[in-house]
Length: 349
Ligand code: MN
Image (cartoon, rainbow, N blue to C red):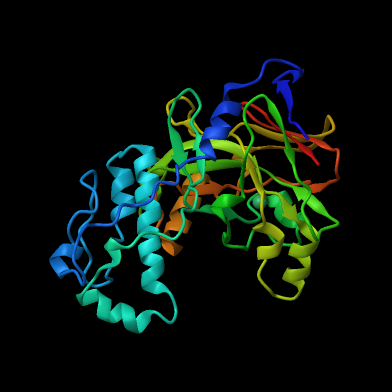
């Protein structure tokens, strides 16, 4: 079904430039193979450590036999996006080789006689990007973290005691992102296996500077920007797995489960510590709260997350949903709002 175009005020209006960016965003990077180095085989250690590309290069790590910092450094140095995506894919491929079960013995030998950089990836995996509003830039998405039960009333409706529960997190895969351009009602596919498909309206923070054990007073300086989005949930599967004390994965981390708008760079928007957040289904208000009602603020979430995981540029954090989550069915129109951001609208199809 072709997506409807809507203006922020309703149906109708001109096609949005982000439709174009959407196509660009999900068609990059071009499947340009990494050119093999022209070396004899087997290469020497010094050849293995020779630059793959003169644009950006991390030192070869003799301990891990990888260029682990390569992607991060490429991003930190502001390498052109297409380039960093290509480099990122290449390096992740290298790391994949390094950690592949069954290849460990060969790999151990290969550390001293490393010709990994002379190989090429058997295929390219697309990098997921979010367009940046008011800019030609794209923000590459690395991981998507989500906090659970972060508004007291929602915590209670999910059967928890908000006064005693420390924050907890789960992840969605980066390719669960469904970009919903501004002013466009995107078709959102009703997923398989569920009979109780829920919306959760949330503020999303985007990390621009990584780190671990981040201090509270520094936490917001790691934020690059914000957007709004839906943490779509197969509630029946989530609850069934929870009842069995099994992972929530199938309820939370499925294809297209992360509809979100384009990113707003910090400076164009302020930090979101208060302001209305609401969600309507078919024009009827379902969720309505204030961002100040979060149990754990975005800054506190960054602190807690960075104790468990090293954060990197490109990480997104869903900051939790208010109370009154509920079901949608095919044909429903979902609109969500956060003060200071353009609304996000999807049609369940
Ligand atoms: Mn959520």
